[in-house]
Length: 204
Ligand SMILES: [Fe+2]
Ligand SMILES: [Fe+2]
Ligand SMILES: [Zn+2]
Ligand SMILES: [Zn+2]
Image (cartoon, rainbow, N blue to C red; front, side):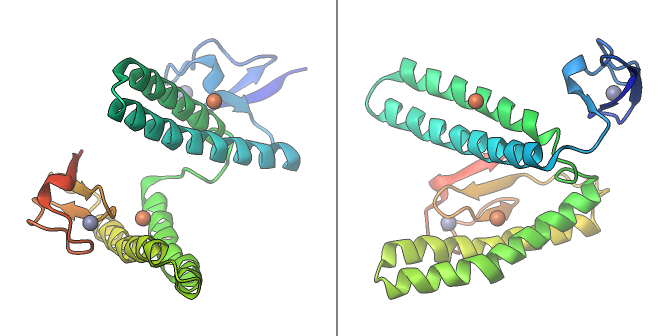
């Protein structure tokens, strides 16, 4: 029976028993095609779980790599970084099936803005209250810094929405303590956590 296959890179629809070896429009490899039909709900749930699990494994492996470096095992650190990269590939693989997660850039900017605002206004306030009630000021500070920084992320997304087609090239610096994002040259200290300039990482 003929089936419909969709190229997840360019949207081209192919009809046949199997996907083509390469997309005739964009050259994508056959495994970038998915069946052009709705996913059974239980499969979609497990794809979402697998996506979350692989995403966590990526960050965890980078932490393992940093620890290996600290202990003086640079080769083990390289292995952890390589496998972290592989877990990122897996996470991206599952994302391919999750309809509506990645959309066009304007929509993605709007969704990214809303996610930041939701984190700031809905999730973090309760976490912050709980940490305070349980007298864990360290956790309270972590949540607090993150909440303050989410609003900054939201603002940057909002600005980007109004300047999507801009030839101005901005380099970003990210505070490695709190996640504050600077557009352009960073100041001597992070405005949210007070970290020194050497703790900013240049991105992009
Ligand atoms: Fe994996
Ligand atoms: Fe954020
Ligand atoms: Zn294609
Ligand atoms: Zn900071």
